[in-house]
Length: 109
Length: 112
Image (cartoon, rainbow over all chains, first blue to last red; front, side):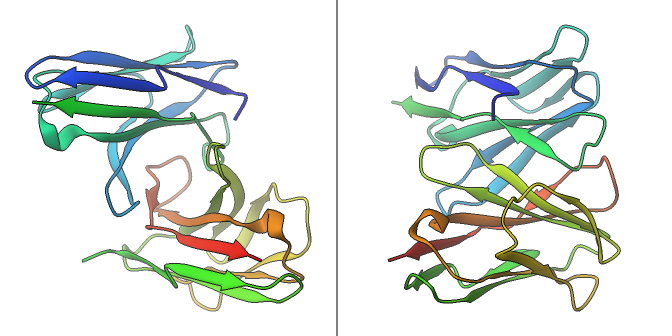
């Protein structure tokens, strides 16, 4: 909701290129998760971070609680990376997650 | 195989009726949640349960009542349905507090 601002709302990449998605938070968050919504509408977990960075294949995420932001970097984008990506963050009570509005990624040949 | 099962996937209801959305998780998790996504809005937290007890409730209306008959079940009963209740309702679970949440594929509710 208002606690999370996600950008860009839409992104188009050519195969093999890369870019970054970003979420800014209006308050200090305890941890952040990144998801991708697949074609069936399921939210697929990508990362959970309480601090620092994590990398998984062509995806890398960073979270800075003090500076109130998180990023998701995609490199060497593939067609199957297309979908809508969401960040979600929780404050001291992490069970209540605040979601961003999503980034619709389209990877083109 | 999906580990969080939500049923039904699609649901159409008339205004004023009552429906129950089903959620079962087979991840062995202790905490379960309901989130809602209305058209063109981000997912919004509704309820969280831990060991079958209500932990957080950010749903203003008492028409929404979670029901937990077993540790791995958290159904959502919605009474006196209104068109504004139309949304996709997502169930989620986690092992414990402050841990990674896993989401089901949602139930898309349309109230006519």
